[in-house]
Amino acid sequence: MDVNQISARRQVLYWRLLSTMFGLSEHGANFEQMSGEVVAELNLPQLILDPNISIQNLLHRYPELIPDFNQEIIPSADVEEQGDVITLRRAVIFSKLLLNAFGPNTQCGVVTAQQYAQWLKDVGYLERVLGYSLGGLRGQKTGGSQGQSPGMGGRVDGKSESGGEGAGTGKGEGFTISEEQLSATLKALEGELIQRMALREVLQDDQLASQLTPSMPLVEQLLRDKANLSGTALKNAKRLIQEYIDELAAVLRLQVAQAITGKIDYSVPPKRVFRNLDLKRTIWKNLINWSPDEQRLLVDRLYYRHTAKKKTPTRMIVVVDQSGSMVDAMVQCTILASIFAGLPNVDVHLLAFDTQVLDLTPWVHDPFEVLLRTQLGGGTYIYSALQVAATKIIEPRHTALVLISDFYEGGSHELLFDYIKSIKESGTHFIPVGAVTSSGYFSVNQWFRDKLKDLGTPILTGSPKKLIQELKQVIVN
Image (cartoon, rainbow, N blue to C red; front, side, top):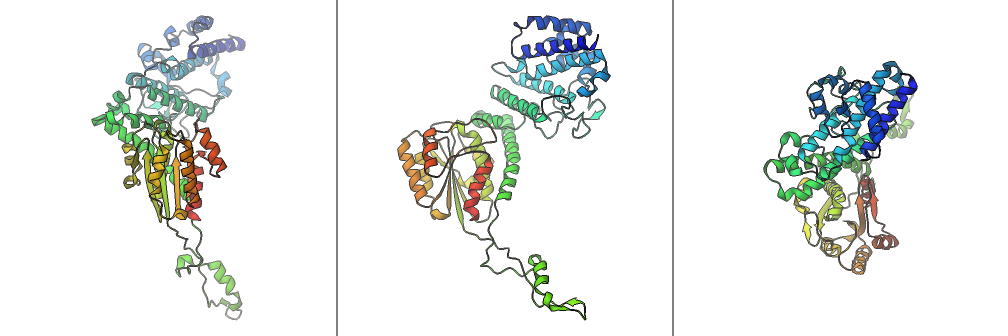
C-alpha cells in the first residue's frame, strides 16, 4: 500500500472511532464496514472493533495481541520508520484504547463496581502505551498494580513501571491533545462514573477501593452516603476523605504561608541575639572607627534587625452553607479554617447551617471530623446562621466574618440584607463567599450579588487565593 492508501485507511478508522464514541454507529455503517475490511487486511480479529468487550477479555481470547497493547505509541515524527502495516496496525490498537476509555462503556446510566473496575484496567492500558505509570493520567501519585492484566508483566517495552523521565516517549508526545487536557478529561470522566456508581459495593472491597482516586466528586458522594456506611466500607470512605483533605491542605497551607506575613512592630526594641544582627548596617555605621595603622575596624555599637510582628488578636468566624450545592466550597473553606486556626493569635469559630445551625468550633482544627459531622442537603436560612455568628463578635474591628453560601435564602431577602448591612456597619470585616473552587460553573443569587456589590463587599468566587488575600488584610493589618 502506498502512503495515500495508508492515510485513507487511518482516516476511516478514526472516523469510525468518533461515530462509535458518540453513539452514531447506525449513521456510520459505512465506516463500520470499511473498518472491518481494514482489520481483515491486517489479519486482526474482528472482535477488536467491538466497543463493549474489555481489552483484558480481548487479550484472553487472542493472546497474540498482548505485545500490541504492551507497546508504547511511537511519536508521529517516527511513523514512516515503522512501515505501512505496522503504522496501520498501531492505529487500530490506539483506536480500541480510546474507545474503551471514552466510549459506550462509560455512557451507561448506572455504573456497577465491576464496570468501574474494568474501566480502570482499560485506562491502565492507555496509560501504558502513552508512557505513564498506572494511575498517572488520573492523578494518582503511584501506579501500583491496578489494572495489570495477564501477559503485561511488570514492565512496558523494557522500561520501568515507575513512570517519570524515561518511562515513556514524552507522555503523549506526537499527539495534538496536551497532557493536561487528557488528564483533566479522564479525571472528569472518572468523577461522572463515580456519581453513577454503586459506591457502597466498591467500598466493601479493599482492593477495589484502593484504586479510587480521591477527588471532589468522590468526597461529595461519600459525604452524602456516610450515614449508610459501616465496617470495611466506612473505613475505606474515611481513608479516601482523609487523603483528599491532606492533598488539598498541603496546597492551601502553602498559599496561606506565602500570604500571611505580619508587619514589623518598630515600637518593640529588637532582640539582641546573633541571628538578628544586621551585619551590613553595623559595618556601615562603624566605618568612622576604621584604624589605618592597625588595619582593623573598631566596632563600638552593634545594630540589630527588628523582627517583632504586630500581634493584634483576630477572631475569624466562618459560617458555611452545608446544602448539597455548596460541598466544594465547604470542603475547601473547612480546610482553610483549620489552617488559620493553627496560626498564632487567630481565634477561629466554625458554624455550618441549613435550616439549623451547627457549631463545629470544637473540631475546627480537624477538617476531617468537621466534614463527617456535616449533613449535606436541606434548606438555606442564612439569617438564622448570622444571628448565631453575631453572638461571637466581641471586638468588631478585629473580627472577620466569612459567609460561604450561594445566597438562595429561604427567608426574606430584604431582612437578611439589612442584617448583613448592620454587621458591616459595626466595623466587622464581612466577607461574602459564593464559591471557592478551582474551576467549574457556580450559581449565586443575582439579587444578593448586585446588592452586596453596591454595599462595597462583592461576593468572592473562584480560587481560594482570593479568600486568603481578603483574610490577610484582616490578620496582618
